[in-house]
Length: 346
Image (tube, rainbow, N blue to C red):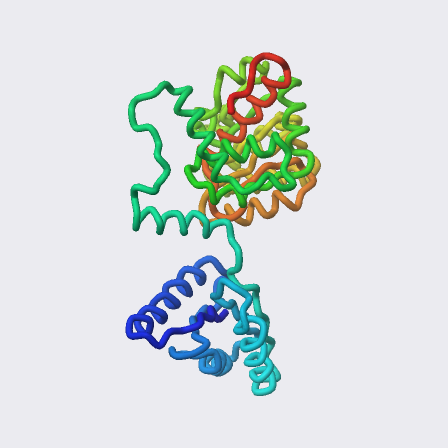
């Protein structure tokens, strides 16, 4: 993998471009499969340039080379210069496969970065939020109004989905997370039907259960339990090669049928649940699968999205108890509003 920047001949750029590419390459490397080499290169002015980087990789016996243009806009470098260089390299190294990714382009994440740069230069332009003490209800309402302004336009998103996204963004404190929240087509209807039917809600850890609004749970006639509290740790053999949370999933088995299963901490629990789904042992009404971490978290959520079970998830390594609880609370609030028990807050 070659991270390809434009390069700079300025005195500061000669120092900063290689350093930025080094740091970006190092950061990308840890997020890819083991054994993938990631290096930086410049189109011009700095070394290594693209030809030098390809030569170095070819000397290592690399058979496939991906080039990621570290560019914002599809100017002449993207549309002409880089393709011409790659055609030249293909003739020099015909046994190598060259793949070019899309450039950075428009990414919603950049909006927050641009705003932060402006605030750093002119703090007085930042959003003016009231600093005097206010009631909890007013704080929540003000927070949701701010979150709504930060979210991208509601394209291809239902009202209920947007309400959930807004709650998750509020819980995470990061509007960029909105792009990573994914819903299966039946997630909200199945989740709401389960709540209306008074189905149980199971969480992987107590922290998720603690974040779920007990008043809303009772109002909807559901039950709430942490799976680890529902199983006897002493009955689990010490030599059992699964985590306690995964073991709790396996022990609960058919009790998870028709339930809402909320997993915010343990990817092993999500994988164990998917094993039961694959075996036809259980079919949850909805899986809120948002485990956080760098080991199996991303992969477990990718597996979840391949299954036919209704799901709400956050892709990648992010997630956690707060976002998982916020998702369940949003569903409970929507159910309460639809049942006529009360008006859903913003």
